[in-house]
Image 1 (cartoon, rainbow, N blue to C red):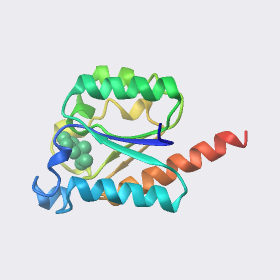
Image 2: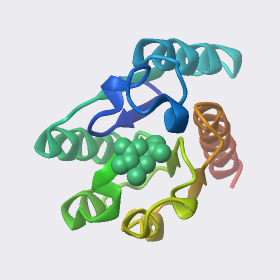
Image 3: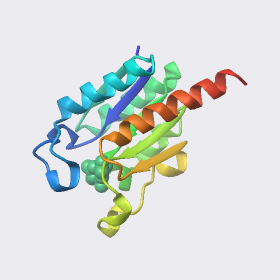
Amino acid sequence: MSEILVLNGPNLNRLGSREPLIYGSGTYEELVEYCKDVGEAVGRTIEVRQTNSEAEMIEWLHEAADLETPVVLNPAAWGHYSYALRDACALLTAPLVEVHISNIHAREDFRHTSVISPVARGVIAGLGVEGYADAIQAVVRFVAQAETK
Ligand code: DQA
């Protein structure tokens, strides 16, 4: 099991070709490598996953809850309406940081709400894929803080 799970929701496997003006031209594979490099730089093992199945995502969150694994989550569109995903996130005991590549607050009205944010330790939006690095670093900091208590 990895030390930090980076979980990505629907359509994020299409990064690179999907609305590049909004999400950039980097591919999902490049995002995976980027997150692993960030993990290496901070001395943590990062596992990056993506699914278009809400059930699979919920199973992964249950796994993270059982193993007390910290999570960086880009819930993608589910974040705007999935109470099932929110309830699964609420099971987590290790830190959860929500990340969105785009600034969801500057986009369509339906994107302004995140049902995940109230159960996340922190939220990053609009910083591009670099937001994943900030989220990973924040998780590492939260875990270190918890260990010194
Ligand atoms: C997203 C924003 C969501 O509104 C959208 O549905 C996504 C990606 C982001 O990373 O900016 O799929 O989570």
